[in-house]
Length: 333
Image 1: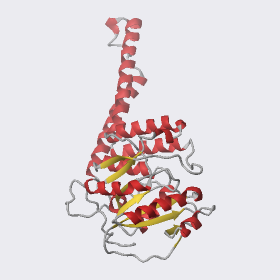
Image 2: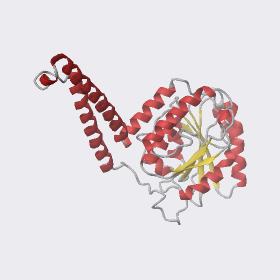
Image 3: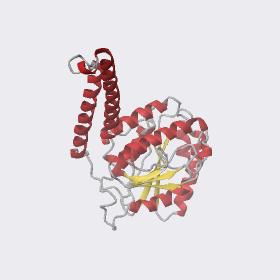
């Protein structure tokens, strides 16, 4: 991994914008121009940090020519890995992320940062611009969003928006969970909501991307698996309880069928002295009890668990005097 030289300034307040980029030469130049215009017009210091994920199309050169800070991976590690690299290297505690494909408006970042004072994370909501999202992806996105809403118990207008603002200390407590690939933002959203953090959504414009998308249709299965695993990790009863209920319902139906069959074959007076209940019924009913007990035990462990490495104070407990833009106490570590 290589990086352009940088002097870390711990004075004042500011925001680091992390731009993960892999083969995004076509769109990156305009994104950086827009970000630099925001920096010129904003009263906060804005650090623009591009993480080039071993691109071979001139992405790195485009970033260098723009005069921004650049970190380059020696090999392709993934979207989430690029974000992790940028977040770790950011100068400031307040961090914004934005994609390099030109789909997100850089001018929305100041308003998102302003909203961070009363929230733990502020997400750019694309739901008002569905025309920019390919129709073939919309059913899968709706299914994932519905499943995530069920798991978290919260409304989620946009599950995996790539434009959002948060504090570095929030992400640090989830680093072990966050994916190295495209599901980074999905994981961060679900984890934050399951932990009762305040996630605010602000409507933004969403544009047609420049260049070719890196997301492929079978990534949907990975997202589905991710949401299921996170639900077991954070809200296990929301998974095990419906499974137990379904097993109990099927077991009850099978028990009623067994009794009716035994009554026809042996007569009602002999039903209590003949073999009535089938093995399938017993398995279904016992399975329901076991799944319910497993869910209750897992829920108890989640409630008692402590997030390792967490030093983040939620917005509901944070004093009003804290400035979201203060430099991180660890500097560039």
